[in-house]
Image (tube, rainbow, N blue to C red):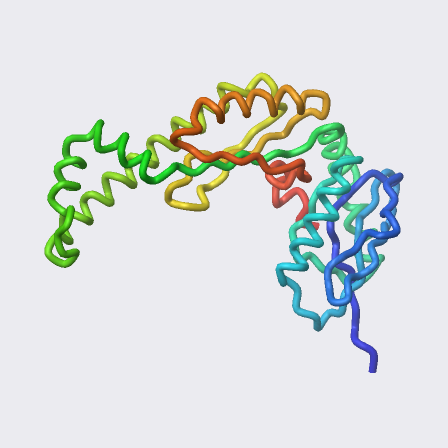
Length: 251
């Protein structure tokens, strides 16, 4: 008996968007990407076996590449990764039920793209600044230097607490400074949760296509000013993952 199949849903786009012939979806082998249309909308989908486990790194890469490639040429509303429905009828029902809301959201993202700025403190540079500014931290560092870990456990725990609190405060300030630097150049922004204890910046920006060059120039200038303390990288362009609310595309 043939495996039962469903449709993996990637995102919502305007009805005139056509998947390219080489667009590859999730699965092994990759599924062929198609568009299910209704009114002014279309959903990008590909067929998957319902028994097939999804979530391999290759699947997430395929999902992101399809959406990011689409966002470069048309507005797109990403649907949560792993959303699988029974068939075209279920997709059409979703588009029908939320047609006006999805269409309005697509209008909002027209000619806008997401970028993510991620920065991480250089640990030695950060500790150097902290020891210069905090007498308690400097005293604790001297107490534990060259001593057995077990004999200086309380001091090490306290030192770790001071560093953690300092990083959190500096992270909040750093995010504000970046937003001040590029705020006039972006349509929207959001602070993302840190991905590492030494994260200095983790921000997503929604940028109008016409202002991307200005935006990148401003961030490069900021990063140059902070290069001795923070290693920054700009990721994108992406689909607007951080600006499409989860409930909006729950289907």
